[in-house]
Length: 403
Image (cartoon, rainbow, N blue to C red):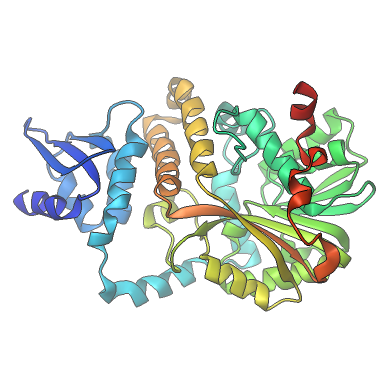
């Protein structure tokens, strides 16, 4: 234990970590805010975490070997992440990089399997913590006090403004999720939308919702990979799907988008991105949450675009918007935690809350952001300035009526 405590002593410099061991011993590391409390129920857990933090931290939490006071899990993870650079070792960097590429070799059938692992979980679970429209992606908080529902509507309208939608246009939504954005665009912007998903559970919900709202004539949802779909569209949008493409397929993805866009067409890709250099997906996340998933560095994202006929018209980074979104999801999940534990077990609950907290911490520490990349083949397909995004007509309709 002396060695592990010494490592923490060298590691923690930003923020304060209060460590409590099973024998009652307490240790304090670092100084200043934020202040995190870490309580262990097994003495050997810290040794395993220090030896393999990427995998053992999450797995030991799932097994109940350590805990934090209610509502402080993301704070602890943020303190650890802010100081984690001291544990990096360059010697294994190439091996980790190559291993990460192999984990992202997302051929079509592998992509179907990877999506099913996460998104084909019971619809009931997602309805517990998402907003009413079931957006499972970063919201847009024009002000931090927005409700989750209002922030998700604001995200949909922000994207609609960037797409420069006109009534009657054909729109392709690659990775449409539960159909939230596709249904919103069809209903509020009078466009025809085709949504692609690899999840049978999401497909069923999207189709049912379209029928219930009388939108079946303007929206169709297909169980298809982007590489299996061939048609022409005025606009293409992809929200929260690019993280599942995999680096070996970035150029293929953007060439497919370019080939599917009509002349003067506009596309928008909304994806999590790294604010530092390329890396690998966390081992725990890859095993338990998103197999085959990887969030690109900005350099990797733009390199993929360069292999297509598309040009970047605009790029916006949504900083900490996802931290606010994840915090809202976690709060809703915690309100229903007893139900989830009864139905899916305590270990599943701890896995899910660790996933939400770790993701929140990664955005709160500025390691990650969300990039919205506006693309076109012709430079005059969009205005010269961003002024059109913030004109009164670009404001969310629901918010405008209420204001």
